[in-house]
Amino acid sequence: MIKNADGVFFLTGKDFTNAGSASSNLKGILENLGISPEIIRRASIAAFEAEMNAIIYAVAGMMHYSVTPEAVKVILQDMGPGIPDIDLAMKEGYSTAPDYIREMGFGSGMGLPNIKRNADKLTITSTVGEGTTLEFLIYLEGLSPQTS
Amino acid sequence: MKLCDLIEDLSLEVKTSGTDLTREVTSGYVSDMLSDVIANAQAGSVWVTFQSHLNIVAVASLKGISGIILANNRVPADDTLKRASMENIPIMTSSLTAFELVGRLYTLGLRCR
Image 1 (cartoon, chains in turn red, purple):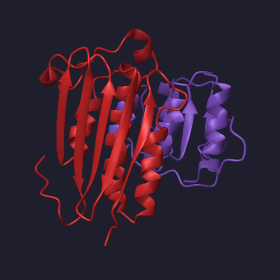
Image 2 (cartoon, each protein chain N blue to C red; image 1 turned 90 degrees about the vertical axis):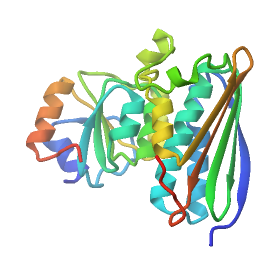
Image 3 (cartoon, one colour; image 1 turned 30 degrees about the vertical axis):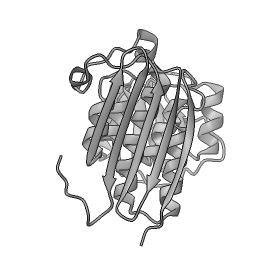
């Protein structure tokens, strides 16, 4: 039986030096909880993409995670520009990243689709000029309805 | 195939220190787009790229990549090497282009999955 756990990581916009450390820490926490490698793989990919989005686009963000015997849930709340058209942002290949971000190999327009592909449930709410909240849920093995 | 054998076969220059070069390489991937690597590279891959900044280490670590080869004399940044050594991700460089490198890796029997 997987134990309950929860916590929060703080993210600083444009801090590419520490980018990825929240999802890397989360990966370690999930490993310590004894969650299966396949669930950890999916959760860390989704968390990394969400973390990078906050670092690329927002001033700051918070990644909150909670683990229950049923699921891993991650909520990423950012103080960023917001997403005017979420359906468009979900389209593979669509990106508003500036050139210097693309030169680093980000901004291929695959981040949100990657999150969707790896999560069982994804919800995005956004207010232009205020920020975006992205929440995803991954059911632990045996409980996944696999609705993708 | 072991990473150290591959290093010898392709005359790669190892830039990191103290990383494990005896690990197995079971597949390969080439891309400069990080999300593409995250989505499509397999664990145990050797990753050929032109990106040399710090964040390639996070991507490699996340995916369980066996080693990174920087193509065409690309020089890794100091902080990249430091982080890579810390996270045990070997980084190698080559004077070969990405095209040449991938061709040789393919000839050695590596595939994408």
